Length: 129
Picture 1 (spheres, rainbow, N blue to C red):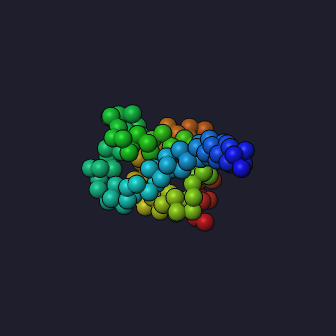
Picture 2: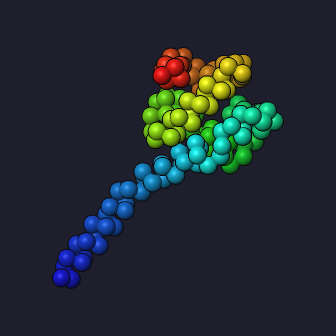
Picture 3: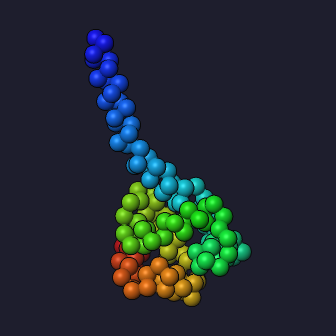
């Protein structure tokens, strides 16, 4: 009985270690996509400008803007490949709302985060899906 408990405890500990990176990643994506209502940012030009200034390395970043900025290269390159369905919907909504109204800022983002133009075709297809 003691051996069984020891084995179960070892398996539980091992499982916790294996699951930890996913938990950290899930927490990171939750912070980026779900912690703050994206419409609050997109509907407030002053707040949006503070995020964009962070993304463009023109001003300091708030903690949330810094997390979003950190996610931009991976999210753009994989078209939110590590996102859950809710996060993908948030990303699509944000793109469809932001790009038409802030074309110059989007072009600036692409120059920084997609200088070779590799990601934009897949992002555009995702937006239209």
